[in-house]
Image (cartoon, rainbow, N blue to C red; front, side):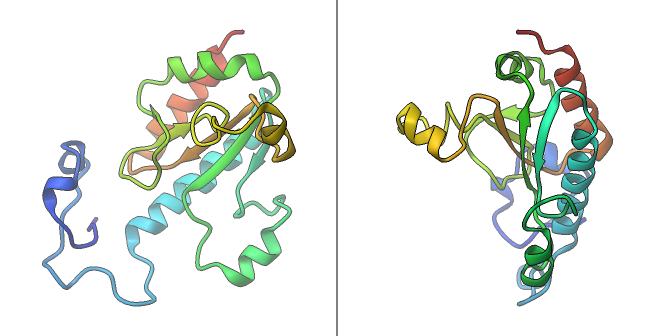
Length: 170
């Protein structure tokens, strides 16, 4: 697939191994058009959300592309696609840290929107400066994990997350 125009030096070495190519400058994104890679990311995010929704260790999955999401109807009317971000809430917060350590393909960090899948622990990353009460008021609890889906193989990514989830211990 093609990536939007931009400096090739910003791509990780894995991009070439994934068969990604840079378009000729000026031939990439067109105003109002969703690029094919965005559709791939969205499809992977949707499938991951569906799989996690069925997992016995997952309490809730938040992804606007799921019909069970409270904002699904609004998202259908107002969004051009549902994106690559999803949030899950585990049934036991004590599994979160071990799950993060067991991932082999997925990276743990606070940045989103890159070519690699990033798993974020909001309580420890982007919302760490808030007090415990402030986080609780915003439903940012120790059992919450955010996932920004990257360009890895859908099967490999889902397998990596499921394996880590299945093996996670308190």
